[in-house]
Amino acid sequence: MEDVLKKYNFTFKKRYGQNFITDLNLLDAIAADAGAEGRRVLEIGAGAGALTRALSKRAERVLAYEIDPALRPVLAETLAGCENTEVVFRDFLREDMAAVERELGGDYVVAANLPYYVTTPVIMRFAEESEGCRLLTVMVQAEVADRLCAKEGTKEYGAITAAIARRGTCKILRQVSRNLFTPRPNVDSAVVQLDFRTGGFSVKDEEMFRRTVRCAFQNRRKTLKNNLMSAFSLTRESAEELLARLELPADVRGEALSPHCLGALSDLLSE
Image (cartoon, rainbow, N blue to C red; front, side, top):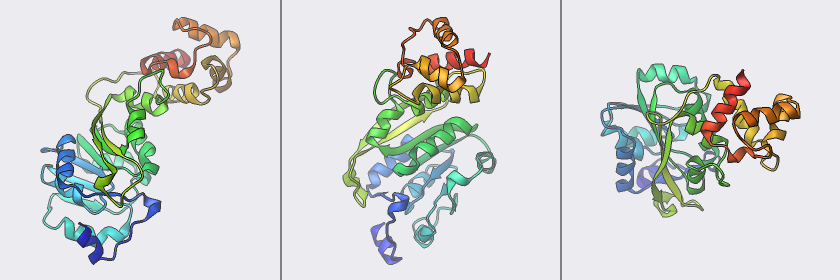
């Protein structure tokens, strides 16, 4: 891979958070983790195509997005012979999710080595907008992995944790040393898998759930009661009544509520 990058005078761009995986065994393991075997696969951030090629060997079809057009000649060479793979040189975050899913034509899995600056928006798009995604297997910074899979009451627990739990389950599959990337980042990473086939729960109003979650975590120094009064223009008595209906103390903080409890609160608010 490094020889091909040099051949086309490719330079890494900090604005895209480009850190490519160089370990072929790890790439094959991630492709296996992703559940790509015989499936439609959506990859976010093809990079130099090393993971893309590993996915292509297993998948029925791979649709890969890459934001950096400078990688076009690199990918043309590294993905030569991968007839089941298509690379789209556009910013995935600007794409219409429904259109992408129509292009994929059915259930699919996602694989990605995500730069830090797009980790949250990419994951939130799938948690909130996708209908066909079944598994999301992503490489993220180790501390971000802890937040994605956090439990209520911990400092890592936050809005993105609750959004993921609304859709399914989350687990850390493997830890990845910073030494396996080019260029070498300053932190270690982890492979995390979000499984939208298991767990999860329904709510009466999706938008109200999102508002409730934002409210719960908007100011962690304040009690949930105060946040509810501010976000929903409730009186103190109304906010306390809502919490009492859920058998929660009046001074509870948002991070103490499980995702299921946040869902129950959003259902009460939607009434």
